[in-house]
Length: 299
Length: 260
Ligand SMILES: Nc1ncnc2c1ncn2[C@@H]1O[C@H](COP(=O)(O)OP(=O)(O)OP(=O)(O)O)[C@@H](O)[C@H]1O
Ligand SMILES: [Mg+2]
Image 1 (cartoon, each protein chain N blue to C red):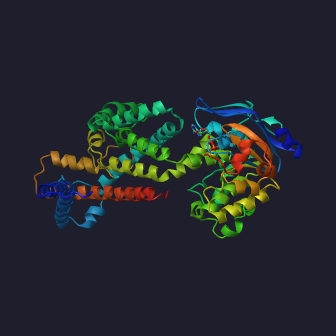
Image 2 (cartoon, chains in turn orange, purple):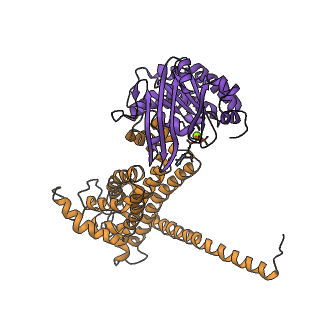
Image 3 (cartoon, helix red, strand yellow):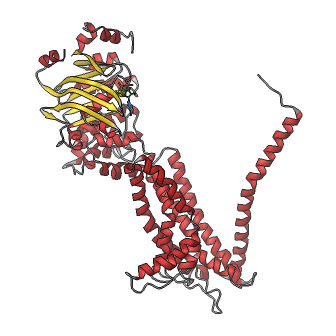
């Protein structure tokens, strides 16, 4: 049975199509706009500051009279907090995922998975105050010389924030391992732990790696926790007991401060933003690549 | 009838006595008593859903891996009841290996590592890994095809080769009994013929129990055949008797293809 569209219906179809196309384009255009501004302002920045000053220095003091533009002082802060966060979240998240998929009862699993998502929904400003007013004083009991603002406390709390991402996505990956593989292992005289660690985890490696990368990119982009609890001190150091400043925290500092627009100090935030953008872009591309491999059935 | 086969073949390797099995509250085996003769091939045939898989999964205690299942009765390996409390199923499965319907090599492992997987999963370091790999693959009639590509992923092989790899993986543990649940149903006729030849070879050293839907296959490879129907053992005898002069009418109807 063939039904011809009337003139009016055909017009409506075209309108709806156009509307949907427009909606789709909004996000594309927004992204292009943001990248365009970043590139433009970063280009402006590098008219005044050389690559050598940017990449060859470890001091970052654009707001002082003696200006230094060594991005490594901020990159180290970002890498340090993210590393502490992943160091906290990966083992805990993985163990949680293993427990949920291999040991927990079905009901417990159905209860905990949404609870994890609630944890992921807590505003990060609350995590920030938690890090400042609870985690740091708590850690100071064990770690003498831990300053009031430090990378360690902020990183650990950031780890709690990204824990649900790792636990939930890894759990999905582990749960997706075909039962036939586990049965194969059991039939070869493997016990449950050997089956999990030698068959199930390796088989879900891509999914776990993708979850980890996603969590790292969340950690790198995380702002509130580090603004509140890690100090605002560009510091080329990998000692987590010290106060540091991350790239994101620096951008906040300048955006909220009284730095006049158009000045070189103001332009630095775009150069920093660009660096941050490239970091997360690379990670996302890598995660995307892993996901494609999973979908294609490669591990 | 099952006494008959016991008399024919001197030595009994495994024996189930009044074996019952459940999925939840659904009783799928209603008391199976059957003796598996040592170093012969025993075929299990019967229509879909009659409990063939469940039965052989009770022989290496794989049935209990599925949640909410239950087993009652006894299964003896030699003279030992494997459902005794003191028996660890993990150790039992080293002696009673299993090959599944769909080839399931470990996707993250090479051909070599797949063969060694059983040992490694048990935390055993093979004394001479290369010799173990060569021996198992040779017994599984796969060595000539893969000896130059041992480091390739197990999944890069054809379906029939993957199934022989899974057999090699089981043989590497030097089990006493090998259970096979429709090992050829996912394979083409040529691959099937190879596995059937292989089963003939295996019985010189191992006791084999094979579930099959394929009457010709049962007739070709097995020495004794058990016919299951609705969770009961209907008839158990020498294979040629089952296929030429069965005693039970149901058996006759099934092997002549009138139902199933
Ligand atoms: N995982 C399971 N959960 C619940 N019931 C099951 C499960 N597996 C099998 N059963 C039921 O147990 C009965 C016996 O199944 P089994 O797999 O042993 O039959 P089978 O003879 O091997 O059949 P087939 O020839 O189709 O493989 C069937 O009624 C089936 O529905
Ligand atoms: Mg079956």
